[in-house]
Length: 363
Image 1 (cartoon, one colour):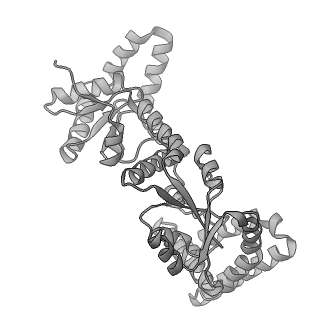
Image 2 (cartoon, helix red, strand yellow):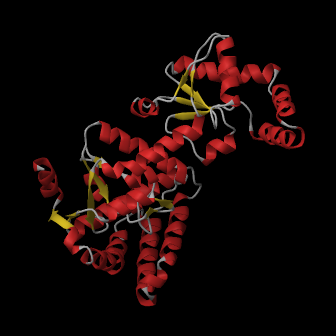
Image 3 (cartoon, rainbow, N blue to C red):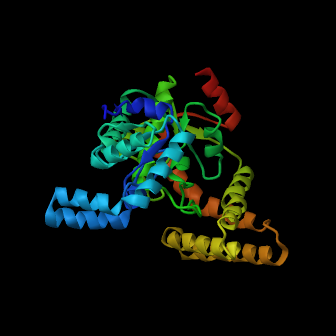
């Protein structure tokens, strides 16, 4: 058999959003993979476990023999079929395993024997992952950062989406970035977040962006941590502050944390979505009890229960506005104002969404 194609042109894979076949076991894939990758394993978790035991007890040769025995006959044909079906739909797809060794080579050979061809990644997952981490660490040398700040509910994420040179860390982390920011769908793994972030940085820099805008997140977004080198760089960046009237902030927060959040719980298939959502909100309020203080905590809980009762009785969300406004003014605003005071020397500009968009258009 002639030499089968290899590639380590990772930049091209990122920029073309190349579809990838990950032939590692599902447990490996779940821990972390790349954007546009699908898990079509050569060996499943149980087979991997058995082969691992064999390798430890009898060595590599016997482990390979066991692998061929476990993945033979109809099992082999089914897995080749899954790969070739994907390649038929994605002719530019590439293939990888952990280190670009036996598993991806065997998969590539079987695909070739079936009449199709696919390129595998040189060095596999590990080499591509290292490339992406290197790009994150090197990125601060390639752009000037601006951090978009503003009180909770001011519409920072909405504004970010209108900027061509912005990277939405909350979107990548699947979290709204506050105590009440958890979504019904889980956050990505730390590895998946970092991989997606690297893709976004590479794409923006390749587009010629020499100034990138990020929302003010601190060191983490929910359970996801921003890589240290990038977080430190953003911490020192100039700030632009989005100023929005309180009532508009209440409406924005109500839409995001109540209206849209409840829709998500319904779409997720909860039997009692309102009950599930309200329980999660109660847990979120409990988590900030110490910071709020007993009196304010009691008040915010009472406002929330009144709103839930009204929704149950009349189907109206109107009463949540009082809860949202109390939460903004008594919890979020004092914290934010304290933090922004400490960064007064970093503030470059303040204004409404329209004024900030105008500011960027002139920059």
